[in-house]
Structures are given as C-alpha cells and as structure tokens.
Amino acid sequence: MGAPETERRDVSDRYFNVTVPDRYRWLENASDAGVSAWSGGRLFAFFNQPPKQQPMIAVMGPEIDPAHARIVLDPNALNPSGTTAID
Image 1 (cartoon, helix red, strand yellow):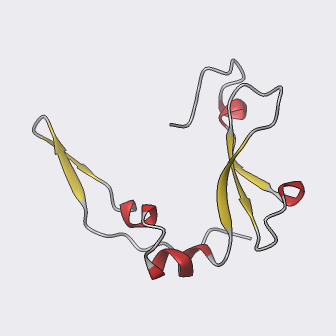
Image 2 (image 1 turned 90 degrees about the vertical axis):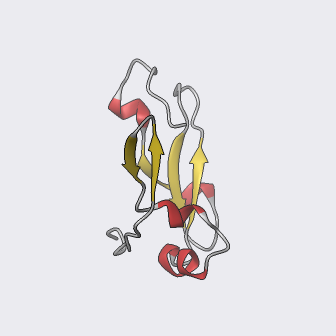
C-alpha cells in the first residue's frame, strides 16, 4: 500500500524574520473531514517496542490490532545509537 495523494495547503509561520511553510498542517486537525478521508480509516500512532530506545510511528487498519501494526517511521533504524527521536 502506497501513500495516499496528499493535498498541500498554503500555510506558513514566520520565526525571526524567516518564513517556514507548513503545507501539511491541515493533517493535524483530526476533526477535519478531509483528514478522515485521507487516512482511509487507518490509525497512525506511536508504537513502543522494547528494548528499542525510541518510539516509532505505526499505522493500523480499522481493527486497531497492534499485532498487525506496520511501522512507517523508525528513528531507531535511522540512528542505531538511539539518540534520534520523534517529537
């Protein structure tokens, strides 16, 4: 399963005279009907898997069964020292 097509919206913030675009910010609003349509009934969640140092982001289908979670971002794989985290 590939990533769904994702709309980009013109949203930006200005920090210390630097404009920073945030075209996917709309995905942070879980009550937005567009977010529900985009996620297709999937749940994205932090997923801990000891003894790994950092939590990962996983996606689950409508059954929300951690045994069937698929890891989509693993900072432990990006940096095996365990010092890279998702905030």
